Length: 295
Image 1 (cartoon, rainbow, N blue to C red):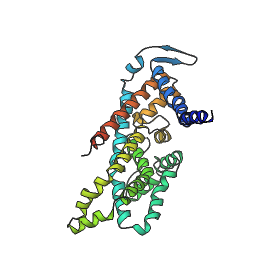
Image 2 (spheres, rainbow, N blue to C red; image 1 turned 180 degrees about the vertical axis):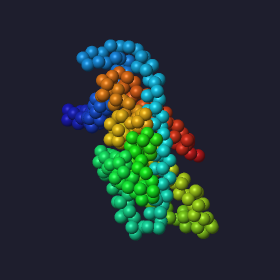
Image 3 (spheres, rainbow, N blue to C red; image 1 turned 30 degrees about the vertical axis):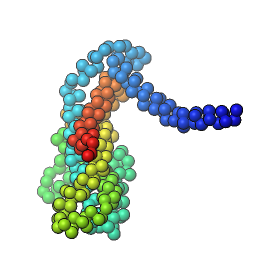
Image 4 (tube, one colour; image 1 turned 90 degrees about the horizontal axis):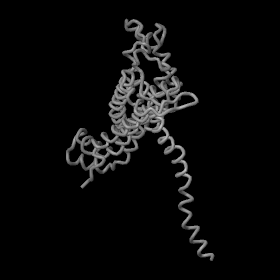
């Protein structure tokens, strides 16, 4: 009887250990997704809801939604174009020429990521205010430039959003790439040096190929972060950017759901966002050859 009880408990043990994850997944992930899909086919007003079919999805083809999607794509593309090559170059410089100060510079670059988005956004909003006494306009005055309304100018909205992203995340990406560089054996560079390879050849033939997993990881999280951006835009404009120049998909979800109370269409937008992120992620992973079998 004791042996049976022991074997029975051993069989149940894996299910007991897995149960917290399964319950958490069902409650906090699966149920919200299913409920969001159902809500996207409903018109929801305080106290009641009714099924309206695909009307919420038909409403998505509006100028406001197209603007939010284009802004999110532009923001994601610009941040990736800056936050991949620049950290790679800085990480190589830190890894090769500044090894003694590696830890100090790594900490200095990493510090901005520890600053709250609200604090960082507020500081940048004050620095780039339209007043002639704002920090950036004061510096511009030294070079004979007039005051610029950076925040409410419309054409400078994307510049501010990308600038905040670069300031906050370039240090984090440097740490990622430094970790990747330090896993590359020095013997490979020494062998290439003996064969007469120059710095550019070593970078193209050794560093980049062996950094590929890190580049894929950083690019993937940058895609997620780019399309999920909301706080920075909200801090700058509280949802009222000039000509919707700072409106993002997540910002539109917030406007429709929490400001206007239309949770049906906000659910539809959320599902479209999930589809966009999935497709973009699959495309970039395919471009990197992530799904190809190595021979």
